[in-house]
Length: 266
Image 1: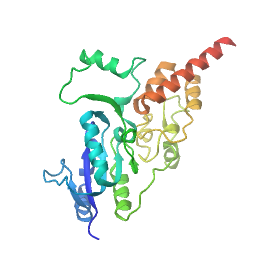
Image 2: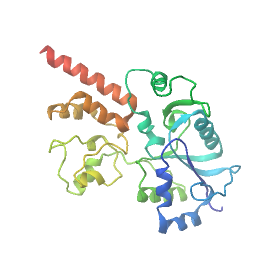
Image 3: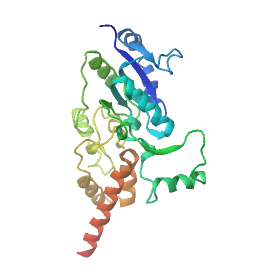
Image 4: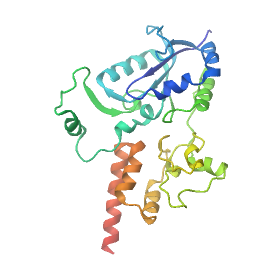
């Protein structure tokens, strides 16, 4: 049947996910041997954009009209589209909570007017799934080498994997780490997708949620716990918003305001 045809692309982001694919080093030659890489500009100038792809890996959020056009073209010619990295899966830090003003008003504050940027009209940053069907995801900021290799191996065998839906806390327990929440630190491990191997908590650094929220996160309970630990609502909202996006932060902010009103009325 021949090698699966693959394209690796980047929209608005830091290109860290593509860079970590290159950083596979010893395994990189095997990847190029197993797959027919049709487009990967970070690795080679040679590319073929006119071929139908078996798999397209796309990093970055949709933040401009050019991004959207590129994404639609990739989706049209790809059998399987994989969102890699936090920006592609959740929207990235560029989609974090920025205040009550609509997106375009925040944009004007930075650039002065709505049509200040003429190279390509901007859009409010959103993940790929806001515009197209995404068949598989690989979270991370950036993605890690081992999870990518496992994902690529399964795709090579025609298996579209799902992201494990359990939190970083499980990985902390496997490593017998002392819980940072119990030590009074603002850790988002209970709400964050596993897969990183609990790198930060293992170094006594609180999780900030860069693998994105788990599907059934109980953020209300953690928010109340953090209030009990002495953290201020604004501080909690900002931490949740970094990798959680506007909608999540708005829900949390409204929840905390309602809770405070209830407490003050007692």
